[in-house]
Image (cartoon, one colour):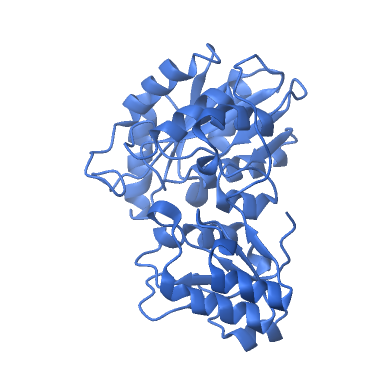
Length: 337
């Protein structure tokens, strides 16, 4: 899948910033690809880049309209269809990370065929995966896990990749979600894989590697989330993780989209070790990544110190304060990396 850049980011009329996390992720990690945003009335998200009409975006060289949103069920709202068709008619390709395929919407399919434009469904793949085998693979692997969905698992592994490479370590980001695929140009949206093949798909994107190579695997959902725990467990088993980082957002009381309370960081550590031991008995935590965006700096540092001391692990906000402490722990716990 080769998606033409640069992008016009379509946010629709999403109700909050988390609903546009795909767009935020692309903008944060590939800012040079994002020339502008297109929003509908009532949109509560703002990427901080210019709002553009279709003619303005085309004048800036934009080649693809990216539907940068997520929602429950991955549906495409009906009132967005006319906006997407208009983009196609103007001469843009369209890329989406939603579950619903663009080509399954007759008006979009007809416009793309008539105008000769490409439709990219990043969440879907033509690849066929085997069932997971749990056989020991060479190389090293790290997985991010969470107390909830949308707590920073992708940002943490991207920050780790950057920091580890800066130290001369051999590390690659492995995308398992639609935003990660947009950012890396490869990977698989694991929540769109048939359940029996989730662990096999993760084994496929993180195969045997050199002894000192690290695959940094993007986590999804939470083992405690009633909606997404199945995906999280398949990912854990397929990752065969040597190390994991727990990701957390400290101001939430319930998990996103449900009434269940957040688990504690300790509960996540213990359950990850228990379940991850099926495919790697040596699995261990190496850090805690906290999204402190809602906290003042002093409050954030105090909270991180408390969490780190309470769990005997380096705790940081990777975006706000960097992730060198976690890299230090990886180097210390895995000599020779």
